[in-house]
Length: 95
Image 1 (spheres, rainbow, N blue to C red):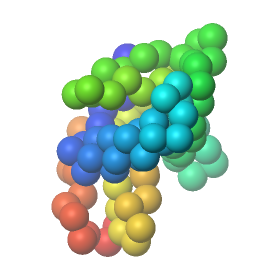
Image 2: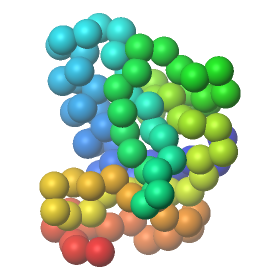
Image 3: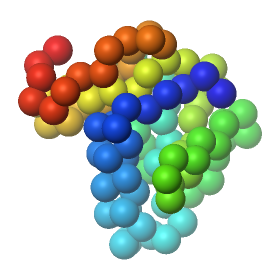
Image 4: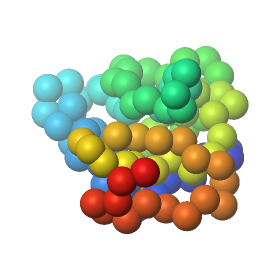
């Protein structure tokens, strides 16, 4: 697995997972590739080629081949995909 998560991204994804679980205990966050990088969607189960990534108490499904550093940026805690080794954004940083 070649995906990394910043503390900020982990916090955002944990909160989303907790909120989703209140309505559907089977819901899990799945990270998928988009034209602009990465997106978190809700899924009941992984796709056949997905990788499971455990971070804290949360297990994410990650689309096969998705690589890099998952980070966040303002406004609205948007997920972004950066190359491995990138400097993580700080809360409140625009970029």
